[in-house]
Every structure is written in structure tokens, then in C-alpha cells.
Image (tube, rainbow, N blue to C red; front, side, top):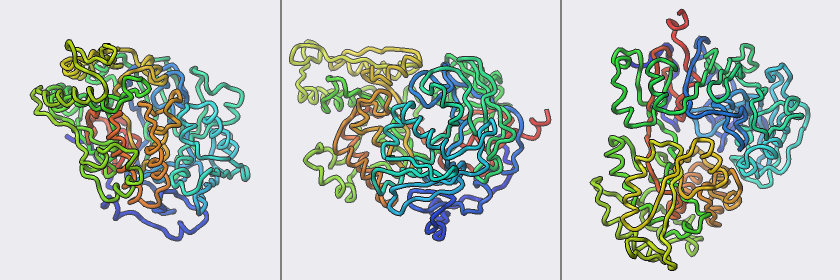
Length: 602
């Protein structure tokens, strides 16, 4: 039995064929929507997004699980561990559609105007916009929110918003952001994502402090109650100011959203099967293959489904910390990566479920191909003397027979270490001073040790000593923020329209700033230049080609050992919910689901 569909919506056409370009609206000073290149699917008078059911009933509770704990209700700072869902109490200037590449429609902003040279963006504030206490949202709140994130928020915001020169309040309901450079098509959209905080609430409080003070928002939900580290409950705001806007029709259909915390995922899984919560996003291929043959599944009480995921899968892998001297040499990083036997791991541990990550934009049109294209050559040729030869050669990852035999990879790895000044002596990979090469894997999940152990065995065979450091989630986050690790496993997601965030991922300015997203600490003038070119791309084609060129350079820096990705969502849910027949392209769409009539009647 599959999910029940109770409404038939307009069918989705092929991606580029359905985009409605309103030349009149593009030419107009003010627009209801904003996109990278002036095209958007939904016209000014649209009634709702196609993947939402405007007639969905609003009732009931949706319960989910989270692993670990929380000690903060502020997801915008480095300190502490914020409660899951805390960001959804806030509205932003724009709401972004889930079936277009990076396109925003008016939410707090009723209309948007971008300068012809993209040197500024202005927003008119919806006169009906209110915080939960009834106070109107003004331009002063927008300016305050931006400056608060820059001054007190996570360091990533300073990098992300670095292109903003000045914020000017034009009048009580209009604000303009002026940029330090022109032709950055993404920056106006990025500003549209800024969560809007109430100035009157925060101006006498410490935003950077880790505590459990319930914040004031303006979104569809507010925090009703919580038990520190164990549970948090969000209540739908019945008089939510934006509930009838087209961007929100059919969204936020549950009266309550509850997140229960579990220390261990295995305990959470058993709790799900017993009905303690409603929905599980399955990340374990082993559990998916072996543990869903239960009576509840066979009877149809629990439904399982795989849903295609068309968004970029990014890069999950073992990330090197290039701030450590031992990893500064590319040959060393390449050599270590050769000894991760993905094929064996996928076959023996993951039931063959995964694909090898072969790009920082895996599974999308943004990923570079094995052979370099003419467009990439044109972009990279000016930097040829600064790039490794491999950038201009076919790019591919080592492949094994999944039988545990990695002798060929071992021979190549030893030669690469020798090029880096090491030698294999007395069964130890030694530097010129006779010190053995060694490093530590930092993990927060004990289950991941089974992936690392065969990797460690291969490394030991060429004289590399390794260890595993298992810490709890809060320690892991703290050590990541302070770059206190050798090698760590993390997934780095990507947007279908990459832009300014690339500088925070790979830029020299972010390499040494605590709490930034440049986990590896890579610093390359060429990468900086490519990221900047990507940001000012004047067309989708140029964006794609520049992203592929950046991808190729990053792959040849060997800053990460690619692991795997799954081009689909694996979900299990108790048979109490319905969803629209049309699904969003780039998201799972949980915010458009609703409780069935039978459940509402109980």
C-alpha cells in the first residue's frame, strides 16, 4: 500500500519547459518574485505552489525523532546545540519554491526590486506582517536582523553576507541592501533568506548566549513547550499573519510538531516500530534491507517508500584537515584516499545500495564529467601553471573488485608517499626523522566504526598508524568548530544554484575562521577566483560550466576521500497521513503533508 493521495493537482511538466517568463514583470521596477536569471514559474497572481494542496485539513500532531540532545533554542550561533526545528518559528523576506532552481517569492517582502547592475536590492515589507506578539514587522527589524547575524551570529554569516556594503531604511516599510560589488546575481536572493528577528525582543538580550529562553518569531509555528535535551513541541499559530498568502497555501497542516530526542539511533528505531513517533528518514542501508519486514509493515500500518531525489547530493567523505602539517602534501592525501575500498564496503556493509561520490555536486548537472570539456579548458587554461597536471586529464576514482585485494592501490600509495619524502621501513611509513605517519579519525557514531576498520587495515599494510576517537555530538560539534581533528566524516550538501556559499566552503578568508564551513582549511587563489566567477555568472550555462571547472580543481586537491551517496529518499511512516500527488523536485515536502480524515475523526 502506498501513501493515500486525496487531491489531484496540476501536473508538472518537464523542467525547462514549464518555466513561465513574464517579460513585463522583469522589466518592471518591482516584482513579486526573484530568481538568478529573471525567470520564474509562478506568475504574480498564482494561487498556490503546484506541490501543495490548498484544501488540506489542518489538524493533529506530527511526531519525529532526533538523536542527541539540545541546550539552545538559537540555531544561528556557534555555541550550543540548537533544538531541531527552532528555525521554523521565523519568517524570511522571501519563500523559496521547491520545484525551481533558487527562486524566491514574496513572504515578509511583498515585492522586490533589483538594480540593473545587481549592485543593490530593495524590499517592500508586507503591511500585514506581524510577529507572534502582534507587533508589526518594519524595515528596522530587517536591518536589525541582518546586523545581528553579522555581529553575533555564526561566523559563516559574516562570510556569506560579506558582499553587503550598507543597509538603508528607505521608509518604515522599505529597506535597501547595497553591495560592494556589481553583477552578483545570487546575493539579492541570499538576502531574501535572512530570518527576521524582532528588534524589540532582542535589543536588550544577548543573542550570542546559549540558553533556553523561548524566542519570539513570526512564522507558522511557535514553541509551545520543551523538556531540555529530551523533547520540544511546536504549536501552529492559528492567527498566523501569512497563512493565506499563495506561498503558504497548503503548508503547515499539523497543529503540533513534536521532536523527541534519543541518545542512540537503534533505540529510536525500536521506538518508531512501537508507534512512539510517526515518521522515520532511514539512513542505514542495513536496516532498510533487513529490518523493515515487520508485522506492522506487512499489515500496512507502517508504509515504506523510496522517492527519487533530484537535488545535488554534494560530497560525503573523509575530510582532511590541511591545517595539520601531515596533510599539507597533495601526494599524501591522494595516497591515503587510494586505500579506502568503497566497492568492498558497499558490497559487504551496505548491500550494494550506494553510488560512489565522484563530485562535490554528485548526482546533478553541475558535476564535472570524467573527460574535461572545452568550456572547462577555456576557464582553467589561464591558471594552468598554478594547477596540478591532473586537472586537465581524465578524472576518475580508483575502483576495486570488492574482494578486499588492494595491492595495486597499495603500490601506488607507497610511491606517492615516497614522492612526499617518506619511506616504508620496518613496516612503518616514516618521515626523514624516522617518525611513523599516524592520524586519528574523529567520529560521533559508533556504528561508523565498521566502515573505518577495513580502511584502517589497508592503511596499516603500508605502515600507517591510525586510531578512532569516539565523542558525543556536542564534543564533535565543538571540535569541528575549532578545527580540532585530523580526519572527520561529514556530508557537505550543495544547492542546485551554487554561489556565495562556495567562498565559505573553500575560500582563503574562511580557512582559519573558527566555526566556518571550510572544514579542510583549503586555501587556493585559483579556487577563490573560480568561486568568484561562479558567483557573477550571467547565465545558467555559464554557472554550470564554472561549477564544473571548480569541481574539477577541488577533486584534484584531494581534500576529501569521497564516500557515497543515495539518489533517493528512504522513508517509513505510520499510515495516518496524506500528501499531494505532485511532489516537489528538490525537497521531500513534509511541510505539505496532512492527517487523513479517518485520523482526524479519531
